[in-house]
Image (cartoon, rainbow, N blue to C red; front, side, top):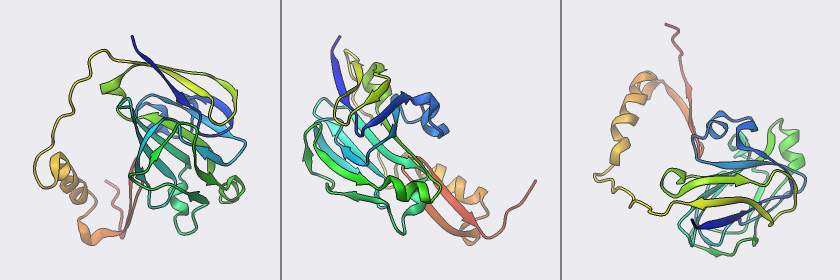
Length: 207
């Protein structure tokens, strides 16, 4: 069985994914991975490949490795709410090619803490179901750019299904969500994170 290594994106204490304080990640909804309680704000690429996503709020970076793994590095918890003054500097853009261990960003840990947000850095393989048999994290104190997890790849990887149509398979779901929150006129604002969408409503009904 083929094994690959994922590097640690930051220095700190590497912890099991299920212990991070975000249920979307800790329950494995975004795939297998691990968390790091950072002691330094320097962020490096966990894998060699291409940058496929940089969040508008700069709090998350996505990579597609040369081996096909899709890896998300999420900088802090609920830090999307700091989008007005993001405590991050990202020096890569979508389409850039990176090498594992290459410096890609800096996070201001003091600013995040001052804003009463959790600094935990979370890394998840978002195509776990298609690619990964097992991911084994190397728990404990780590430096940035060392092996953070050993990943066993599936022997046969199914081709990704093609979603056809203008809005794809999520059109119906989006329509249902808008209807359930009272329609567009009841939506004051929306914040879109990598892992969720937050609706701020004009009125809330308790049924």
